Length: 238
Image 1 (cartoon, rainbow, N blue to C red):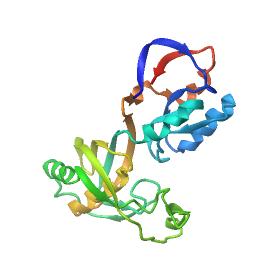
Image 2 (cartoon, rainbow, N blue to C red):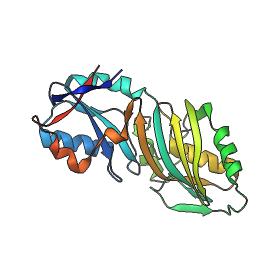
Image 3 (cartoon, rainbow, N blue to C red):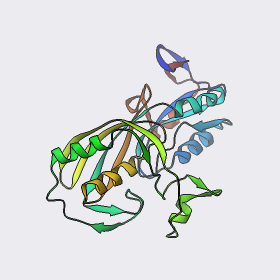
């Protein structure tokens, strides 16, 4: 497991480094990878877990020999914070597509919301959204979704370890969730809305932690240029 050591060391991107980036809104995870590759001419680089364009927060980049750790990092639990808008439904379960249905939320209480979150805590079978990068018959689902097609897909076992209300001001509900690899928080928002009978979609999402790495340690995109061989940073050791 990786941990931050107390000492400082020089970056060696080609040899192997871990770079924590705070992904901004509307950037894809590969946009960040391409930016770092182009800026520093790094040949071997990848990320350890996709963040949707409409999400912000922690993205782990691995270069050189550290790319061998990507599968391990992807298996770590994730923590997110965000906002669900109740009384509204979108096809993508987030803000990528427009609201297609609205319902009244007057009867929804904070206690009822907490009970709904509890209902979706634990090991469960989750149906991935059509607007996802999952492949079916060699084709990304979102490509068919954008054409209005609905493709049959299998549920996946995921685990939601914590799912708590952090704010309640209808129609918006703030939350924090800790979950396993492969969990679609968008689907959680949609499922909670369906359970309550009023619908819901993911208004905002921010990844705050992957394993022991926190977004507070991450570098904003606008500061990526500071990643130079002479720049010092906290060492990352295995």
